[in-house]
Image (tube, rainbow, N blue to C red):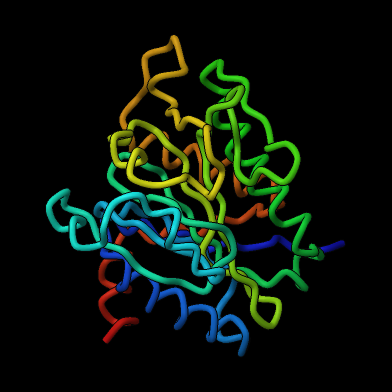
Length: 234
């Protein structure tokens, strides 16, 4: 009988994008070298636009020189996907896991990430679904509620998902979200008729959905993850 599968969960709060990227790179290397178990980072970012490895910065609709005026940063990454926005009041999860150990291919991994966000939306009466005809992420009708952009190197994942709880949607007006024109972006707050709990509860629920869908039965919560974060990024 297979033993319990463990997932270490780091609750980091609000983290600068570059600091989070540096941490992911360190954890991914440790996971590749079998120095740690699978790890899930739960966090938020200050207002940040990120461009994937295809470098589709043309989908940024304002001059880069104007970003400081709206309080946002722009960063180039090696993840898949197009341009997207990260900011306060999103639930962001970055899984640093071994696909070989969990027996998944890249497509199945992405599908399970989609299912994670779809399940959370359903808990609040919102019917979300995967995109159609190559549209990435999770959608409510023709409005996007969750973005996905992952990187897989040597079978180890990084980057991940951003689920819109109640972000400032005006930031999305300055991009073609995920490179898909004429589509709107929405949030759980806009779509549900229910009263939402505190964001920390929603983030924990998203983590629980992830763990169940990916088959982790032993969650190791790092409530003092900010301390670990400082040590890992020194």
